[in-house]
Image (cartoon, rainbow, N blue to C red):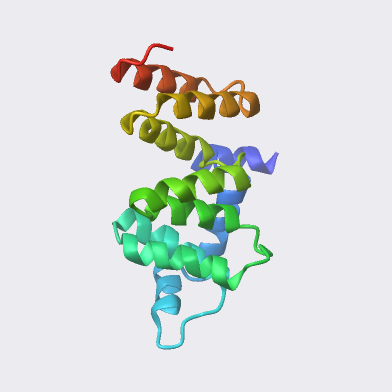
Length: 169
């Protein structure tokens, strides 16, 4: 019953994001955490680096966000925090050029059911179509459909992107 009161007050937020929000609040807020990672003796707490990465990214401080996501993976190689998927997707999304597409493909294999997987898959589909490799897009979509048969958003994206590029399916 208590969760219903929280839902009414702040709206629904999935448990993992809500827990992260509580950790940020308990540590004095995102700016306090950023101070910890930017200090002369940066924290070795992977959780704080993740908070900093998620603070930098929407502020368009992409180089700092990328470095912070990488630091999470360095500090927690065994995924004890349980946030390596989020950090790995962050690294992939913030990378550029061909490296980005390679990292996105790798992270989709390693963490295919994460929240960010659909966005990564759509970026790869668009890349396949833009680079004139529609067969790769079809193969990627077949693999996605087998694992996510109810993902109408990605199916629609695939169909619209194919139509935009003049690809007959």
